[in-house]
Length: 147
Image (cartoon, rainbow, N blue to C red):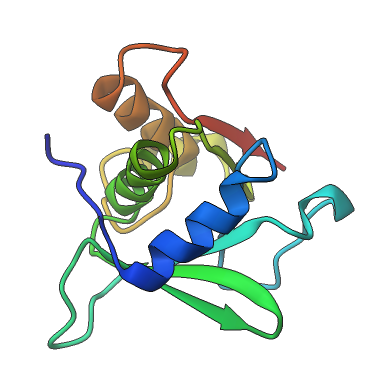
């Protein structure tokens, strides 16, 4: 399976704490300030750096606390694959199917569909397609919400 993420001990600890409050929400942090509903204030944040710096292992997920928020951070050139890997690793570690909240890119539909072929661009349709391929069982598949 090509979508793999390796959780650091700190990431495992953050996931364990977040799994107690069901459902397990993860908010995808984009480059801009994250707009989210107040119900997601205690959700984990996921930051994917699109180009791993030298010496960083792609697929490794680190956990940290920044400004009082719990953050999972990873780096990979294929951003949607990294997100899928983190969601599946979170599910496998906690036993809880995570729910991802992410922004819908404000692009023209043609540009959004063109993003299906570009691994550096987060395309919500590509992300959902990758999740369906990685987890055929809908009951075990992480759910993606857009705003």
